[in-house]
Every structure is written in structure tokens, then in C-alpha cells.
Length: 151
Image (cartoon, rainbow, N blue to C red; front, side, top):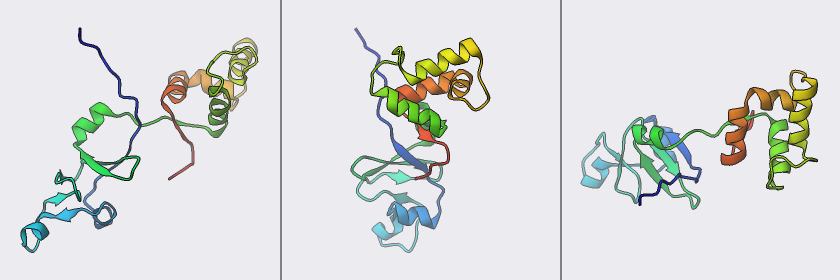
């Protein structure tokens, strides 16, 4: 019987734009240099022997290694992590360790119940969770980035 699997690892990736900055950053090698020619439009990732074209994605592994992924394959394989507000992230970090989304005394549970029973004020955590429930679930399960925070 064939089983179906889901990819669970996150990956840091950047879409290659052909700029000199990205060529330097990822230490791409000009094929002309390899062949002794002056210049070639073909660029390769050091050590991989794989060509990188404008529009491809360059992924970075946990040990700093890089590999390229064609744009169409990347878009079929990866989804960007949701971007959530800092106050929601704080609750996920605090409550996630409890390994139960709905403990009676949990802050997220309390915020959601108060929202449903008493309504909510714009900007409350319950307001955000109710209005972004799919994104909240993805953030809880898959990870997230915090609004305004940049690498």
C-alpha cells in the first residue's frame, strides 16, 4: 500500500534575481571561468555543479549549504510561513509548550471564549484569532514569522 507523506521541514530561501550582490552572496561560479572563457551567462552553485537561472530559488540548509530549486517546483513544494502579530506569537510560544490548544486555564482558550461570549474589541488577540483562524492554525502547527521582524 502506498502511503502519503507531508514535508515538515521549513527552509530559508531567496529567489535569484541575477544581481551581482546575489552572485557574490551565494558564491556563484561563472561557467566561463570554469571553461577558461571570458564570460558565460551560465552560473553554478559552488560545489553542487547545478546551474542557477534567474527566477530559481536558492535554499539554505541548517549547516549553511545552498541548493537551487526551479521556481515551478518551489511553488508546488513550499508555502511561506504566516506572518502574525507579536501578541499572538507570544501566546503561541507560551501555550504551545503545554501541548494542548484548549486547556481550561490557557490564555488562547480564554481569549477565544471571551471573544465568542462577550464579543471582542478591535485589536484583541481573540479578534485576530477569530478573523484569521486558518492562519492561526498554520502558525500553531507549522511555525510563523512575527510582523515587523526581519532577518
